[in-house]
Amino acid sequence: MNGQVDWSELFFSGEGRAARAPSWLAAAVLLGLAALYEAVVGDTLHWMTGWFVYPALFFSGACVLSKRLHDRGRSGWWAALILFSIVAVWPHPASFLDFGFMVVLVWAAVELGAMPGEPGTNRFGPNPLAPPLAA
Image (cartoon, one colour):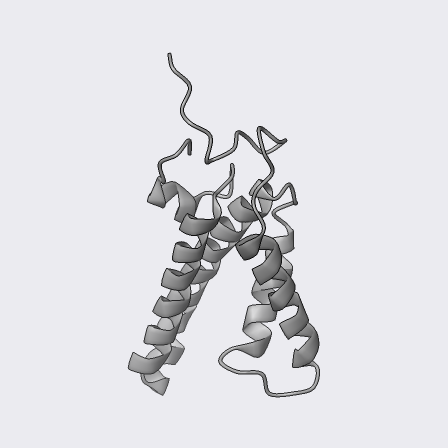
C-alpha cells in the first residue's frame, strides 16, 4: 500500500498488509453497516436479504482482518476466530460462554488495534507505512 490506502484492495483482498488507522476505519464501517442493516430491515426482509448481505460483510471483514494480521506477522487464518467471536456475541453477550469470545475480541483489539505492525518487510509484504521507493 506504501503510504496510500487502496480501499477496494483493503475490503476485497486478503493479500498484503494494512496499517492500524485504515483497518480501524474499515472495521468501523463494516460494523456500522451491519448495525444499520439490523436496525432498518424487518424480520421478513432480513430473512430474504441476509443471505446476501452477511456473506459480503464477512468476506470484507476477513480481508481487512487478514491484512492487519499480516502486518503484525500473523497468519490471516486467525481472522476466522475473530469473526466467529463477533458472531457469537452480536449484538450483545448473552451467556457465560460469551466471556471466552469477549477475551478473544479484547485480544484482537489490543493485538490489531493498539500494537504497531512489524517494521520493514515481513513474509506478507512491505510495511504499509514505509515511504514509496524512488524509481
